[in-house]
Image 1: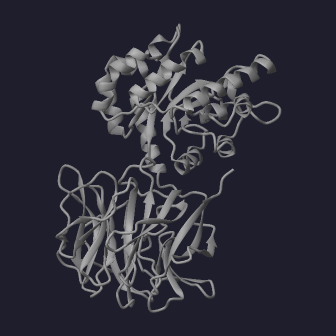
Image 2: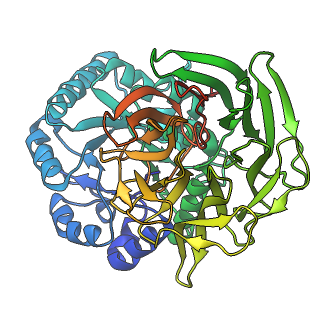
Image 3: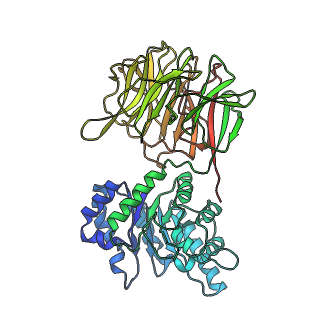
Length: 541
């Protein structure tokens, strides 16, 4: 996901030593800075704002540390007069959003006139590919007798060209439920600010107060928004911002308040059939070849067998493997199932057990090992492995005998490599890799030779699955900028795409709300015409 820091509060610390500031924020995981640009005199806050010349001066340093200025707050005495200057700044620095403070109310006529002015300016900026957003402070966030804030009333007076950059902390401070506000205004919100408040409405470090950060993050992830830490005051900005970044990372895989819909898609008719709905998360359906009325999936660390004709769900006894993730694969004769189970944290290991349930047998002593493929001859497993080489983890494709023993490496630390799956004839392994920049689908010979890129479009593509007849490959596709290439996140807008096994005729089948868990494993029906996947829905205010 994309995280940034609003510079109004910590700008004096930035000015004191820009290189230390940027280095620590980069190491924490931030990639965006949002300065406040002063196009008019700003007495009393000169150490909190940048001039346009400062933006020119700092740009090479920001680029050195991998930071982008996607948006900037603007203080201007005359917005319409300053539009040419803003457009020039946007073109020169790649800025896509300018953010204005919400005007204060004086009377209805003035308030409506200001909304008309902002709307005209937003239309002019939109013609140049730039968005104009309105931000809320404490005064604008106060809930009024009609249940809305002054901020929301102003947005409602503006045209649809005007976007919103809400600060969820100030909304809570004003008595407005942030989660309800976000979803009610989902078509306007273009980026998100986090402050946090305690019960006395005093600003506290983000994540320690009363703001439901998880609910706000769910919204921002679904909308692929940049999320800014907006800490105005702090005894230790570095520590507070580092903790906020850590909290962002924790929330990236959050599945709270998620419902699941088990679906089947017919690739010829493109009809989607909704098989069953669940008030919890299920993931990664395997379609059984020997019993096409059955699907295997995981939920809450356990493995289940679902009978389509009756709707019966039955758990498979996996013994001590009670923390199984969405990497499970059936043996070629479907008498066994291999699972990835973590005894603690994320240190997954691979086990094999009978399909009817029984005592699991450890295959990969080394961890983390995330299963994805079982060769058609039944002899070996392929998996994504994180191996510590002393200077961090390398993420590569490895293989091992189905009986265990020594593992062998198939890719050699060229980017982030994941999702290996054997072709039905056993000659190739399909996998994914970031070695060319974005996550793309690749194919190699079973021995690791002739590694060949198979998808090339400007998206992040995950988990290619080959049809039983070997003719088609279906895979999951994320947008380019909504997440990092090595992130496979839940609850986002994604595409199901299909191509021929030689990479030709690559096209979209379906756009839906899904992601992690939707299609982690091969879920083709034996007829090579249908496959199962999981859609998700959020339960929100």
